[in-house]
Image (cartoon, rainbow, N blue to C red; front, top):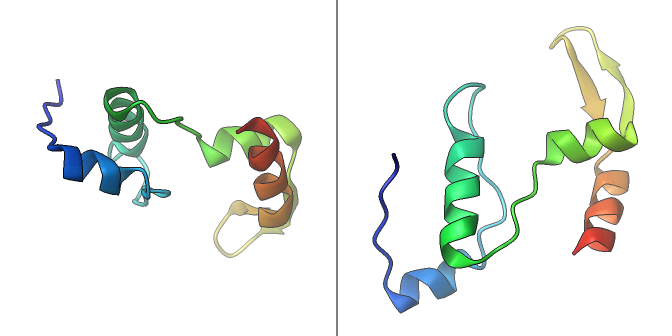
Length: 81
């Protein structure tokens, strides 16, 4: 279980948090969901939004991953929240 202690200043600053970055399997989703729940913010998994809407611009063979269409993802997220 993740434990956090927040002051009111910390909570105000967290409303500016927009990204959690890291390598796969490091706990970004777990941390993001927990933080969002505790400070009453929305949690958005960009990968899930992209998959649901098929918001990709092809495939990067070198990195072996899909190329995200950031504009379309941002448009969709702005409609959600």
